[in-house]
Length: 105
Image 1 (tube, one colour):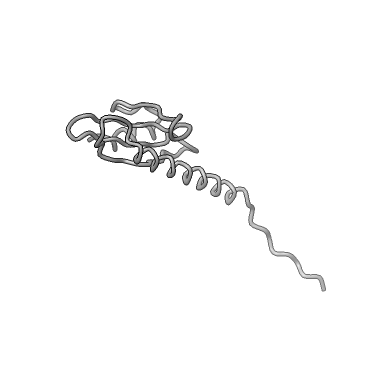
Image 2 (cartoon, rainbow, N blue to C red):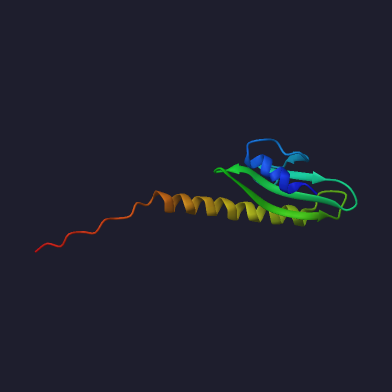
């Protein structure tokens, strides 16, 4: 399995080496599924370079011939958590520390 190398390539702005599929419509904007077929088959779902970070949302052994609905539900839930985390970190970065107020005498 070479998903680690794939994610490193994506972090560097390159395309993954493995086969991949855009699954933005079912998980969220920028979601990509890495594909390694075989017996067993493996999948990894990540969000490509969201705020300069590659978020790995889910990795699993594929057990069905069709769409693994449970795995996609997990990826979608984690995508929502990721968006919330990014939103909260932006809020924290925007707050400037307040200086000490001088007391009136």
